[in-house]
Image (cartoon, rainbow, N blue to C red; front, side, top):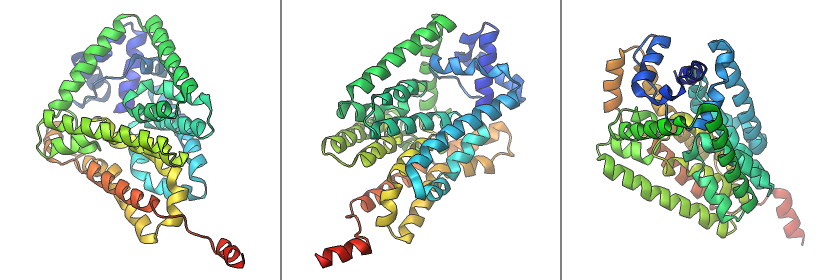
Length: 367
């Protein structure tokens, strides 16, 4: 359904009705007409992503989906495998749930994951080119907060300046192509999305954020969002501290990826592709420091974080939409709990000293 929404937005542009994408009533009617049921995905993306969506109707919907998903998946895997190296299979197995969800619903998580990966790759090389993917992450800005904190703390001013320029440039292009009214529509759509999140419109069990976890357990929206804000502050402070304390670059970049669910209340299961980049960054460090039992525990926890919502969504797939909504309201969001436990295991492993290889130990004894 997600890709269907992307495709509809492209159609709206070519029919001169692009602002209707942010109108919940109009967008719901369009989606119902296309897919034949009452499922609805509100449109809250920044206008920069509209520029991507408007290219999709140039092809039939099935072919557009295949190309969009295939190309963005290829970009994501290039970045992921570049970091994971010989531990790529382990990382890919851990990411089966978000890879499956993203591919089957046609989400853009491969694209955002690839941009995060490209940022980390350029940053690991101390290149100002990191500003390009950082700026392009304006399509999902809540996933870029940790990366921005990392870049600023590391005083990567050229990358930060370049990213700011890209945001401004793409905003100007969006205004010229889509019209000035697109920003008013976007602001109203964002307001409606915030209200919908507090009113439990979205399936919280498919989210892996602090807000979703607490809200699904009965906490009020105001209290849950304040706890989320506290978690975001702590996460950003941890990233800054890691950079200032000269933590190995791979690990501080991984922390910037890992912080995403702690920063944003709106973090779906497919967004764990961002976490996958962080996992790939530290996989070569975790593997030699961990036991087989710990690696299995990590896999199970990451599977739960990314697959909890998927399992429940598949289990209720045969129900009517109204019944599925009722199930969504009573299903707790346990993804964040599994994710926090996974972070705890990773933290414990990374604190261990690097093991001494047998050849190195022999050299030390000889000396």
